[in-house]
Structures are given as C-alpha cells and as structure tokens.
Image (cartoon, rainbow over the protein chains, first blue to last red):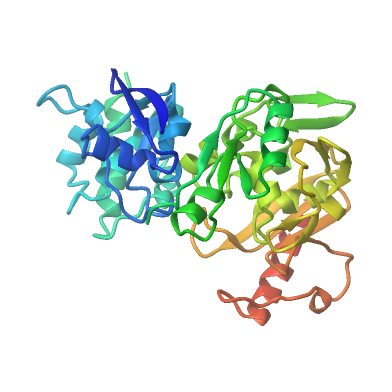
Length: 155
Length: 241
C-alpha cells in the first residue's frame, strides 16, 4: 500500500492505496464523490474527465498514486451549494443533457476549454467535444450550451 | 476492468529509474500512461512493477540547440503543442493526437516509444529526420521504429530526449481518421523534401516517390488496402500543395 495525499475540491485527503487503484475509483469509492462517472474505463468515452492540477485528465487512465500531491477538481466543485455555475446554468437552460451520464466529463472538459479559448467558434466547440461521447446524441444542445456560456462570460 | 496488481516506484533520478528497471525484468516504465493504463485495465499488460518517470529532471524541458528542437521525453504533448518553440509540423500534427485530456497527460517520448504504426508523432519524427537520444546512444528515426509497438530500444535503455531538426523548406501534416482525435487511417507528414506516411504498414515509412503499392501491409481491420492507397495518394497531394 502506498500513501497518497490529494486536495480535491479544496479539501485535503490522505489514504493508503494499492498501486493499481484507478483515480476514478479512488474518487468514487474512497472519497465518495459520485459525480465523476465511469463509462468505458479505457479512455475513450470521457465521462470520468476531471481537472488534475488545472488540466483535464481521464481519471480512468490515471492511477491514484500518480495523483499524489495534486490538486483535483471534480464536477462537484462547480456549483456553490444549490447555486449553479454559469456553465451548468447554460446546460440547464439549453437542454444540454438528456440522461446526464456524460455530463460531468463534458462540463470539466468545457471548463478548461473555455479558460483556454473564451470565445470559441462552433467548429472549435464541436472539435473539442470529439473526446466526449454522448449516447443520447444530444450534441446540438450541448454545443448551444457551451457557446451560450462563452457569451455569458464576456464583459 | 481493473489492472492486475503491481508495485509502484517513483524514482527521483534517471540513474535510480534505470536501476529499478534493471533489477526487475518484468517492470515497465510509466510515462503519461495514456496507452499503458488502458492496456493495464484490459490486463493486456501485466507488469510486475511500474517505474514512474514523472519529475525526473533529465527527461523534462523544451529548448533549441544547434538548429534543432530538443524535447525531453517526458514533455507532455499539450506542452509541446503550446510551446513557442514547437515546429509548425509538430503543432499541426499534435492537434490530431487524441484529445485535450489525453494530450495533457500523454508525453512526446511515450508516444514515440509506444510506436503505434498509426500514431502521428512517429511519422513526424521520421519526416523530420529526428534523433532519439537514450541513456546509451543516439538512434536516427529511420532505425528507431522496428515493427508494430516495437522499437530499437534494448532492455535497460530509456529514451531521454528527442532532437527534431528544423526542416529546410515548408512542412505540412494531413490525416484521415474515422473520428476526430482517433488514430489515423492514414497520415502524412512533409518536411522539406521528405514525406513520411503512417498507417500504411508496421512502422511509419519514408516515401521515395515510387509506387505506393510497394509499401508493405496496406490494409487492416478498419480500412481495406485500395481505400488506404487512395487516401495516401490524396494526402500526399495535400501536403505538397
């Protein structure tokens, strides 16, 4: 067992873990943060995307031991109590989700994407979303939501 | 889908990493993990131990030296893509390497050493005539890629840095993939006079201007040979335009 210390959504956690424990399972089963969804477990679907030291990462392609010392943000970091983050609010208003399984990964992907590119074109949004599978085929409204969030955050 | 058990080491120096790998023939080095961890999850790879190369100073950094771009093996793909020093060919090609989330973790050295025959960076390395510097020697890209997932690296040898020469003349990259961010059906990199193709055989190949049928092993599970050949022809036209 290996000691791991991480800060997740501003809270420090220390655990002893097996080296083979995936970060996705660490977040869900050790920290009981169930917002991070586990889909394919081989890095294809994007549902488990989190921010690791501020950058998006597939938590199913990261070992918990690799995250030792890191700052992690999961989807739970976005809302302030019952008050939605503007990105979440845009998804709510533009019907950016159907079943919601892919949503946490898409929100964390979009969060970093809009930080890097605050005023993206529709084509850029669509290209970025290629790494996140939505099986409800809800992409049109997801694209609308991300573009609306980018407009809302402009001065 | 969970990996089989393994030990985990995070050495602080290159020497320490080499020692850990020498002590255990079933240990594997871990770079960004974006190809290795899926293989662990599927239990296609069952190493006894992983030697994490993160944070080893000798493997980090991007700089220009003697007309070549020198990239530490553990440089994240995203960092090279966004570096002011990145050659235009590498920047164009990196946009096709997986997705933002995998590029933020995946490393330049990891992709080259993994040697997937459809991956973009090995094709660029070949087109640019890159040199792959290990802890023992310098290997030209032409000799580095031996077969599918197989390189000239020997046991006890680790890639330390890659030297990409600035090409004399224009460069371009073109790719056809089934989905954005997927491995290529065919990809083509042009650097000056040199054109390299990926997805057309067991390794990336330099094109000598001759008959494309002579390049080995064209068809695969995902695309028949005649389709790949026509894609390769079209992409060669595109990078030369």
